[in-house]
Length: 382
Image 1 (cartoon, one colour):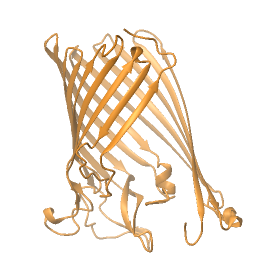
Image 2 (cartoon, one colour; image 1 turned 180 degrees about the vertical axis):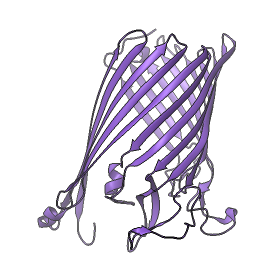
Image 3 (cartoon, helix red, strand yellow; image 1 turned 135 degrees about the vertical axis):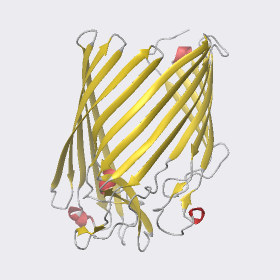
Image 4 (cartoon, one colour; image 1 turned 180 degrees about the horizontal axis):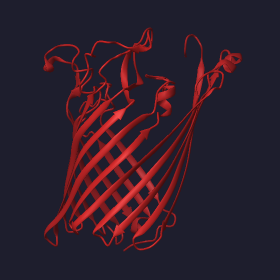
């Protein structure tokens, strides 16, 4: 129900993908892929159907065409060069006027193998992120539309190392570490807006002129024989607001004074998070060809800001923030007949701890999920 009217909405989504890869020789290969997605929201005014003609159409078509070239030099080093062309079309008003935007991105990645167990990786990418349908049209619940949202553009640099070693043939380790630097213009982020009436508070997507991201992520894994795997990951990302002057919507220009949130940490975005997991796989459980996998996962998200750090109480301990979150999940997967039949049981947030989204909206607590999967043509494995 909306403003005394009864309106029904229906979202229609479509997706089509295609990929072709070809190895020219032992050292050279190319690949082309294309992803097309479409969105169309239909609305029906049940009480006043004659007003349907006045509803603003909400349609979006997006096509992503990618190309990649790889050169591999005898497992000593490899080079990848890639490009991506994005075309976005959306209907933005009641006159069915289409907003068309297209962007070209590209990048390269280089991997060098010091030996089979130690590799160094570096990459650069000029990437573009087109707005999603919900960001432009809203979600009809707690996210407002922004049809003027601009695509995000960023320069990404990554440098990483992967090292694998073993104590003996049954005890193996791998360590991965990556450094990240990214500078984004027209950075797309969600901000909280104070509403009126029934819609007291809601979010909307907006652009920041500049956001700088620095950080790192790492992973360590251990395996014992072929049945036990233990690992942990950690990610730290510091997003800084680099927009020096705030935009004045009344004059369509920028305020001359320096913004109070210049160089602030971006709110509503976790900056430190990670997980740890352990899983065991057991073969021929109850019958030959039947396997059981038991797993445990620990999820961690550090406390982060609900609003700009420069606002509110000067004391950091008294500022509004999303509290630290720590949850435990367990899962059981039982496969039969060499994997043709599969039954999985998962328990999420086993301790029923409070968990929240990036705007402090509480998520569902403890949950249990049962899934069945059947492969029609999967060959049996003993």
